[in-house]
Image 1 (cartoon, rainbow, N blue to C red):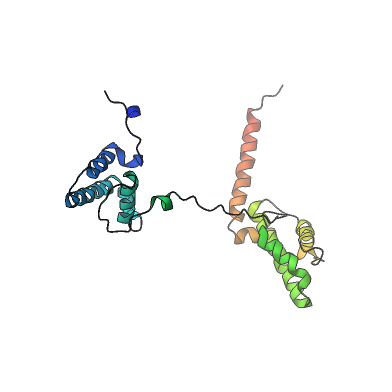
Image 2 (cartoon, rainbow, N blue to C red):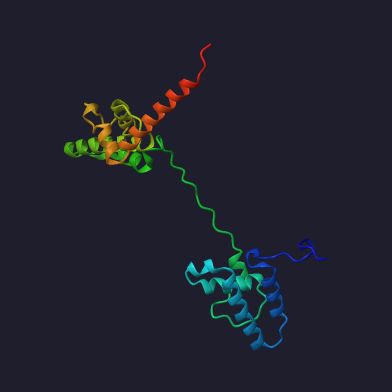
Amino acid sequence: MEYNTTRGKLILPEYGRNVQNMIAHAMEIADRDERNRAAQAIIEVMGQLNPHLRDVDDFRHKLWTHLFVMSDFKLDVDSPYEIPKQEVLNEKPQIMDYPKSSIRYGHYGSYTQRILETAKDITDEKEREYIKNTMANFMKKQFLAHNNDAVENNVIADQLKELSKGELILENPDELVNTNTILRSMGLGQNQNKRNKSNFKQKNQKKKFIKKP
């Protein structure tokens, strides 16, 4: 009996041992025309074994690439596509630089922080007032998107001042858009009320099962 551990390694296991053997046989065919016909037949079998590739753009190109990969790039046949080069396919992707910018409050995002840091460059008073109120309400919305329980307007005012390096100060934080109005605009108000009621019911149910000493 022959065990898989004694057989050669499958380069692309999703195609199975039989396809690998078919490719090995095609590589031994001396006549080029016959070898080309064998390659075409193998491509058809590979397509039937992996029908999901039909949803991939230019799926036959992908099948031909897999054919050459499984032959260790030694199958000499006429491909309808450019024959891939082993060194290109094995080339490691370049390492991407990880963003090094520090964000004071992650839920506001880096762009909010950048906009507020440029507040010192705004000299027009009307524009500063517009930026101040707009960004404060936006920050409140972003805060609620991550924690839709509640947020104090004074917290938003303090963080607005902090991120703008003291350039933008809310004199009347209570004039910010109402929390419930923001939650409703995000479709969270009703769901939050349902969650609160559900949590209240669960707490009451737990109390019923607590035995008195």
